[in-house]
Image (tube, rainbow, N blue to C red):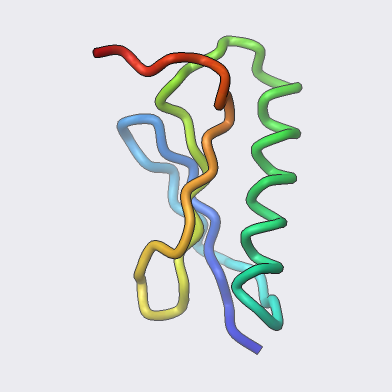
Length: 75
């Protein structure tokens, strides 16, 4: 089963060193959505740059989930 890593990124990434195994990339993406929901409830600061980035075993980004999707990014 492949391992996926869930980095937190808002300019400076916080790397996930352990990762989690999921049978499919879609399952890892769903997990990133749940992480983003939890984080948005725990940290109400509304940083438009904050995302959960899903990285596969090869180190490639497979998905990016914004924690505050309703907040506009600065232009």
